[in-house]
Length: 234
Ligand SMILES: NC(=O)c1ccc[n+]([C@@H]2O[C@H](COP(=O)([O-])OP(=O)(O)OC[C@H]3O[C@@H](n4cnc5c(N)ncnc54)[C@H](OP(=O)(O)O)[C@@H]3O)[C@@H](O)[C@H]2O)c1
Image (cartoon, rainbow, N blue to C red; front, side, top):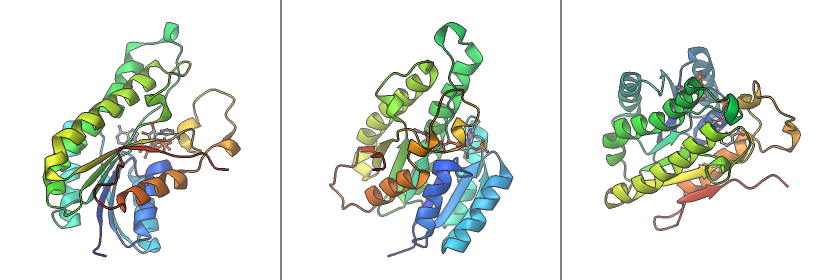
């Protein structure tokens, strides 16, 4: 198999890191992007140790200029094409609606919606250079179901699902596959500052999401990989 060229946002920890390492195990070139340089640098070392070739990109997905520059560098690193783009960077904060403030709402819109839009826009030309291009948008079960205190998260993840559905239609002629991924609760740092009785032992692991993404990428053309659930661990 030729060496895959991959870009993952929010690749410094959690689900993004696991996806990066899954592709690294197959020898891929993986650019990981996030705001915290130390974390993406550490993941690049793990990618290289796992058999891949990593590149750290500082990127704030809420800033179009930052995305443009980081995608440009990632494409250069990848040699001019991207096979896989994973829009994974996301935030999750719980706030009952009667305590909601505008800043929290806008934060979710900027990271969870503007981010994937900016990244897809800037990565498009590089995806067109791939023989098997694929965009994965990491949504959530909250894209399909309401949860308490989750108006901003549910709205932006449902919005990401809608973005995916329409993007798939627009890119079909160019054979770019677009998948929406719907993980349930997954044991990552996203829960560190979220109040609630979380039982992390019952959650999925980031590697479960990574496996779903890896398997979907490797399905033959024509397979329906539009909507990808992540089954709970037995
Ligand atoms: N964990 C779950 O239960 C779960 C369930 C369903 C869906 N998801 C989704 O899965 C994705 C990954 O979640 P996770 O659980 O792995 O979260 P996490 O452990 O908090 O990691 C989030 C990643 O996103 C990056 N990020 C956040 N804001 C960013 C920004 N403005 N620009 C660039 N990168 C940014 C973070 O890096 P920096 O802070 O360094 O930028 C970090 O690398 C998210 O979209 C989340 O909504 C998670």
